[in-house]
Length: 160
Image 1 (cartoon, rainbow, N blue to C red):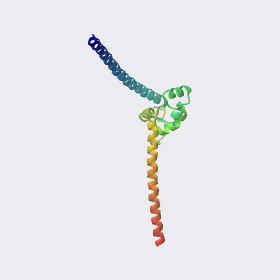
Image 2: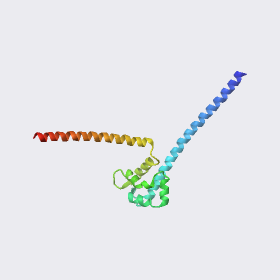
Image 3: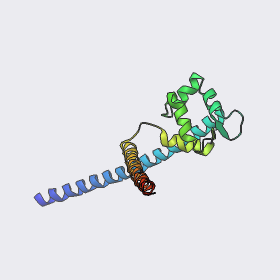
Image 4: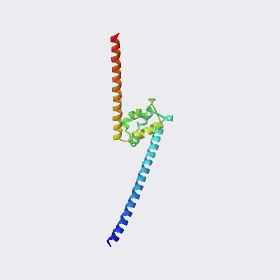
């Protein structure tokens, strides 16, 4: 009787574990699907925002067009819904305008906004620290090189 109860209990537990793993797999697939859908929708919404802000329909967005479009409170709220800070619009535009032309193409705008939405994550902060440290080291090496060259030039001048 004990072995019979133990065997039935094992079958019940195995069925439960199998069902749980199937549900977990479905949940993972659902999470992935939802995240992909969310990104696709965000991308489409950002394109729509760009198209509405591009008043001259040139395919590029100037700072003036962007600034004018953000004057409307409804647009500001819509922009905030993208997890982007309206108060930092000028900074955001400068970061998106890599070449300093005062114009941003649609792909640069959409991809840049997707990268910059939300709060800074730990990896973002650590990347900035890493890059800053690299620049400081390079600057120190350069300064050392310049000092050596100046010292050498002074030595040559004194020798003359």
